[in-house]
Image 1 (tube, rainbow, N blue to C red):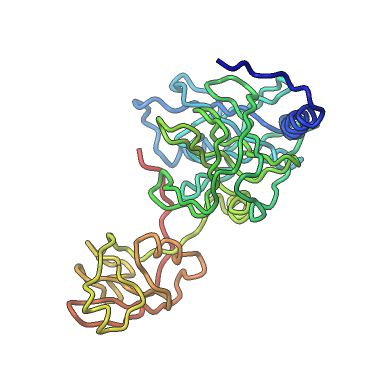
Image 2 (image 1 turned 90 degrees about the vertical axis):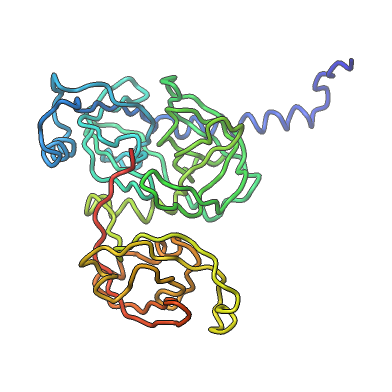
Length: 348
């Protein structure tokens, strides 16, 4: 059995030191801004209305005898006035939220806003002398690039793990059911409690918010890109939620008959089969029926339900939009006016 030789060459030693220096710099640069997030929930026997509970949650309401332990995760401060970015699933159904800083300070946090569709949430604390982590540009990432994850797995505070960007452009299903696009895949070790913590480059820029692992998988971790957060966070600060548009249908992806694709010169071989249409919803008012197959929306091909999700942005609320569908063997052209989507909670 061969015995490993010591690192005798200067180049090998320098290479190891360079890696270590990159990881330690990233960790030291950001760790002061990383926080541990702990939540408490109302007991199921609580008779308060959900509206009252939501209002209390946003005010950071005081502890109650009817509270029970919720969960814990991670987050990081990204503005000097105490705004914290974390995952929506970390704070879901929380009645009170506490954060603990690296220096040991424990503070009550208010929920500013959350978006289950991108699994992002913004919290607010009030305290002096707060360290801040900066959001970088996730569009400049490359597969193989060194990344560092900082968080509180299983309550072990300020744990640092390192790895590389395994892949870019992944799609990940959020707990609300919507697809999160352009997710970062990394092999940096993540565990429960890392959720909401930063994924950092060697330069100390936060380029992702750690959000998910695949149970039983090895080296399969995912982070919401910083550029997605840059789009969502201002809306959460302004409105407390993200506005999206809504058709009022339930659908599923289906293949199209090849003869119909050829006959109608369709650019796709799949569409969205309309399982049901909500009464008095936008689709019903437009004349869309159960059994129709949507093949185009706003002049874009629709091959699956996620294509519709991507197109149903806030810019189309209350604006007529063209939609094309197969009804039997005929193409039907209609105009539908999406409305404002209801704010959705994550699935249990």
